Structures are given as structure tokens and as C-alpha cells.
Length: 497
Image 1 (tube, rainbow, N blue to C red):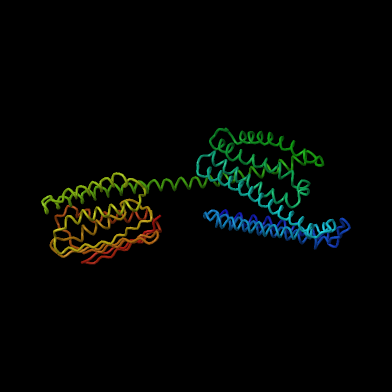
Image 2: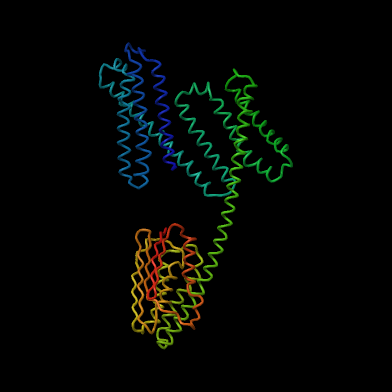
């Protein structure tokens, strides 16, 4: 679940809790009247309903600011529109608060002979409360973003101390998030009820949890404690030291309970539950860690296999490129050898630098395709009955791709689709729609010569690229290959990032 949804439901639960608490306490005073300045007001209609109205308006203003103005306007750099929405929300909230004040403090009308003066007082109070609400909301946003920033900072780090800090931030945030609505509903009942446990015993439980989970249990698992009894002794020592501090603080809240009740209900019982919870979390994480280790081992094997496939690809393409230069030199008496060598140099630089990276810009991959196609076309430039058609997009949209992923299909077309004795043709199309790349290669097919030194390696390029696609783009590619005695066709659809 996204953080915005969690925040929405937490805020909704918070306002519903306040709404029902006000409604409950207001009904208990049903039928009573308050007399002030010789002016009688009904508790329900002049006090309860306006209070419920204020709560509903506050909730609506919070939703408008938190889930519309900030994410959809301010974060999208629509500052003018966001400012206008803020002013509208402030104005509407102030007017609604003013109306509620006119009912809750209607006795003021008896103090001002001029009704305009009384309305001015209500106007001032309404907009003062609306401004206070905006300030409180601003402080809430600052605290929220500060906590989120710290959480993201420590989440990016994988060491143990960062994990502990991250979990302490989450625990503290949850503790404060529950404390605020409880205090807002009925502070006096909170301090006379669960206040001591929440304010003192619960932080004590947090301390026991983190100490046992990240210190005592790992030491026990590593054998630092020679036996389970030694571990229990260390745990009891830590618990007693923290418990003494806890009970001393609890005694400051109330003297009506005995020390025994504090020990049993505020120290011993929570300690047992917290220790059990910390052990359960540790054992669950230990199992996940074993699974993660297994996955890392499998991933290491996949990476080794991928490196092996790359090591097979590089010499294969260099050999074909050198053969191309050799054929060009014989056919054209070295007139275009310089151009071929330049393109070969570009290709070699690509393989020495980009080919060792996990991903490269799509522009570099397509530049390599152009160099390879131009280099191959040098070899067949003077040959008749050759038809080469290319349609390669120039719009790359700053996308990335794994290196040497497309060239095997082009290389396969030139290797098996060209014959100097029979009509030959190759059609290459590469298009990009949003993040989806589509490559179509359609070529003639000619039988291989018996004395071809590359005959034994035929198909190694396509097999390699199939395995690389499975490793690098699982569920993000579709490869279709069709072949008959006279032609060969491939269609690749690839989702890029």
C-alpha cells in the first residue's frame, strides 16, 4: 500500500474518532442549557452541532491541501494555481469557522449593541482559527517530510545501524501518530487511564525489543553466551535495569497503585510479550536471510553464465568484421579499406567499453548497428542482385538497453542471407513506440558451403541472445522466429526502461 493511502486512512480514522467522541460527550448533555451574560444556549444545537461542523470542515480542508494542492499542483510546479487553491481553502475554512463561532458564542450578541461589531468579532475568531489550522498543517508537513527523508536516507543503506535507525523512526512515528488523536479526544481521561502505560511502559517495551533483537539474540546465536542460561541472565539484567527506571517514572504519574501492580502489569507482562515478539521477528528474518542467500547464489551463477555468453559473442563479431574487411580489400583493391577500418575501430571501442556494462544508452547500440550494416554493405556494394533495405528509427527517448542485444539478428541476416551467386535481399526495420522497441529482420536464406570455417559455429549468436533475453528481460520480451527453405524472419518486441 502506498504511503498516501496509509496517510489517508489514518487521517480518516483520526477525524472519525474525534467526531464520535464529541458526539458521545455532547449527547450526554442533551436537554441542558448554558446561561452566560443572561443569554441561554442549547448544548446540542448551539454547541455540539457547530463542533461537529468544525471537525468536518477541518477534515475537508486537510484532504484538499494534502491530497490535491500539494501532490497535484505544488509538486507539479503549478505554483500559481496551488496558491489560488490555498487562498480558497483558507477563505472557505475561515467563513465556516466564523459561522460555527456565531452559534457557539451567540451570547456575544448581548455584549455588543451593534450587530456589525459582533459579526466582526466572529469573523476575526473564525479566520484566526483557520490560520492556526494552516500553521499546524504546515508544521505537520514539515515533520512528515523530515521523517520521510530520514527514513529514505537510512533505507538506501544496507548496514545494520541504518536498519536499526530506520525501525526506530518507524516505531517513534507510529507512537506519536497514536498519541496525538488520543490526546485530542480526551486528555484528562488519557492521563487517568492508559497514559502511564503508553507514555512510559510502551517506550520501555521498544527498548527491550531493539536490545534483544539486535544485540542479545545475535550474541547468543554467535556463541558469545556459552549457554541459554547465560543469555537469560544477560536479558534479565538488562530488563531489571530498564525496569527500575520505568517503575520510578510510573510512580510520578500516580501513587494509587502498589509497586507490585506496577511490576506485574507494567513491567513483567509487557517484557515477556516483547521478548517473545523479538524472537519471532528474528527467526522470521533468519529464514528470509537464508532464502536471500540462496537467491544471491543463483544470481551469481546467472551472472557467470551471462559473462560466459558475452565472452563468446565478442570474438564471433570481430572475426566476421575482419572477414568483411578482407573481402572488401580483395574486391575493391583496398579503395574503401580506410572507411572500413574506421568503422571497425568504432565497433572495437564499443565492445571494449560499452559491452562490459550492464546497460547502455539505446543511441550507442543503434550507432553500433549502423556501423555494422555500413561495414557489411562495403563488402557487397559492387555485387549485383543484392537488395538491402533498412528503416531504423532516429527517436530514442533517452532509453537504455543491454549491450550487443540487437546485433546478433542483423549479423545472422548478413551471414545467411547473402550469396554472390544467387539473388539476395535483407529487410531491416527498427521502430520505437513509447518504451516498446520492435525489431523485424527478414532475409533470403542460402545453404552454407561445406568448407565454411564458421559452419560449426552457426547459430551461436541467436542462441546466446535468446539466453540473454531470458536472463535480462524476463516477461518483458517476445521473440518470434520463422524459417523456411528460402527465407528467414525474426520479430523482437522488447520493453525498455
